[in-house]
Image: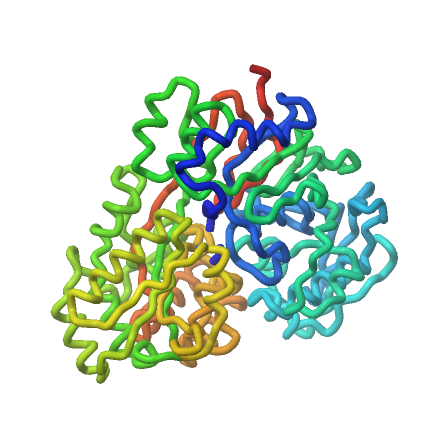
Length: 536
């Protein structure tokens, strides 16, 4: 998140301390047992959704903040905070009116001024928001409940961009928070969403707590993806940071946690054999794993070295490790994923079962590779990412590349990947991340699909020909026109190699059967509304 925007487990409790978990968790059990839900979620370090694309930050934001629009299970935008909206006859003026009853967690009403400030801050950092800002003549408050976006020229995808889960989450914050720079972290964690962040119970590195927002006024529609009603049916959620998969599984078995958001694939058979547990797929579109290469540092500042990685990767080998059950794993060769209308086979002749190490070695030689150190950021608390990093390390070593793993937590990786400096100053060459397959059909908001250099996502790919094609996307009227453009974009992408695919995986969560009502969403984020826990 764009991990990958990604659902991860962070270090906090070692495997040898499994027996101590029950007392640790029971110490946090106020309110009543049946009104508290405990989840092994991951290492939340960046709370501000404008500063991070990782899945857990997005999940945190869904709890604490509300949004103007949300996508439903079919990826169609639906009003959320907006009560009604309209567009002028010339398609240049959009008017939005907030629904009644919206209040921030501090009791203050949500106003149009809060929305305007939030859009402006988001619009600086998000790729789709940047397009809106470039075309906007003005974004202004009309009255306390109404604001307008006035465009210099029509933008038919404006509502889609406001709702897009592919980009940064457009969290509506208090005006005084949203007035901060998009590069300065907002730390208040005060939104108007269905949950309040419990600062008093926050234990960084161990756990975070979220309490039901009793003043939240839900929409009347049934929950549908990230849209519809957001009814909270318990009093408190506790996110545990449990790094070791066996420890998390032991806690799930014992009933000390109710849900493990990212169970490793090798435990699926054990979970399925337990009568008290169940695997459930919430995101049926799945997630695409990929290698992000650093365009700013050698050897991957040379296109030949990037092309070498296309031939080196054996997707089947990676998928056997990441998802041993073929039911959950698929190869992917399109930059538009497997599940979107724009998936295509243009310029995919490089794909070969088993990969082609000799071709990769030849291309590294043509790139002038002279033995420079190649550093892979290895997220040791994300088992799939860590194992995939080791496979890349082994494949590169096999063809003579001087490669090194840099072990760290994913939270640390999320910080380290922003370093544009050389290797000797803490820089990097490769990291593995994920992106929702369903989001790959949106090259406007999907940071992974940008190639505009310094403005691009980490790795900072740059290709002017590709960007000129991508710029046409927002103004095309029909799916057929976009499908034709998608083929042109993909042809150019695989020539300059903006990233390298490792495969597509559908990952279930593991839950106790007493936890029901989980909302299925077409993205790898975890909304906590609508869940309920049966009394034991």
